[in-house]
Length: 441
Image 1 (tube, rainbow, N blue to C red):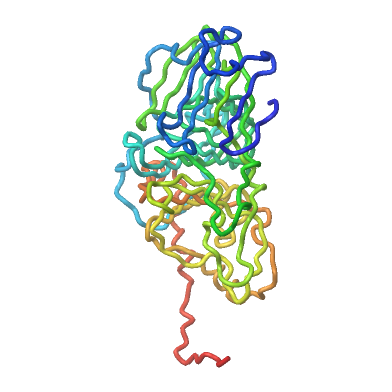
Image 2: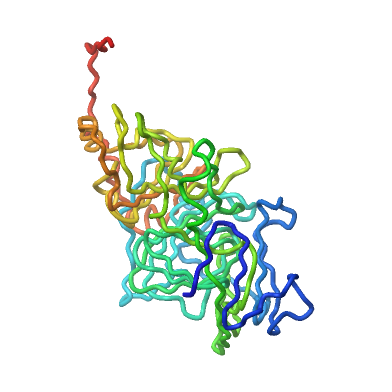
């Protein structure tokens, strides 16, 4: 895979070592590029964005991406932006692990294995999100994917992904994440039965959250993000190479006779990148009470309202619990945000039964949720010694200010909805004692 380039949002320069000097010296688009390459800019922001938010990269390629036949509509499968397929459902929702198709039954690659669970907003107005599962069993062959609608934050749960992009290659394993930003072409190789989660955002890019009083260091550190180094293939595909384009919530494809991964060199700050969740520096309460989950934010896609995210990516990593006189698991809660949770591995502390790796849950806007009855009783009586929390576990949350609609596929077609979910709170009983008198200190 070659070396990786480290840092979040940096200005990078990279050349495939087979072609030293492929980057033009001192300018972006000379009259004739080194090695007879074409210069092509990929813009992830408006030209006139302020410098801190201006995103663009220059790609030096064997043939420009404009050389292709016309796009035509193709079957969208279970990927959708139709948020009115079924009536709204405010209930707490939980899904058992999503089924991975068997390769003996049907070969399904990353794109054909995309399934939309929920979302809101509109790609045309550049404001909204989608949450998807991918379940696949075979690699993409002579076809790539390009999302014109927004950014993909990919969370592998089972199986490694070898992702080839125009910028180079990345191997992404469970407990790592990667972000493929709007417009970047990529293909995915897998090694057997493969499953994971995707958070898609329209109209904003992911960034590191502000740290405020935490100070200069902590949470996800910029140095731990990696982007691929330049790698190219000069390959003619006489049988046709397919570019699949997600555009305004629909899928389109076009044909060309060469590999799109023909970028010999590039420079800029608009790149794909990956991050290992084990490198997250967790912050936690060390005196009393339960800190808000916002202290576990890895990446955020900000809205125009200060402090209100289009989407946050939050993790619940292994850590120490030491808070005194405190009910330590998550508290009972109603939220003006929507919360979709997934589990990469292990057992989530507030739902040790039923919430399983490869499954998920959705607690919609103002729908109450919290620990199940067993968790409440156990932790109300526990000896409050320092303890390791979430050892061997990695749960995460996609939190959004959008009120998300659930798709027909998620509610019916996939047949993984756990209709008994509400029962985990049924055993909760009243502990109210009207004769209680507080002790005087």
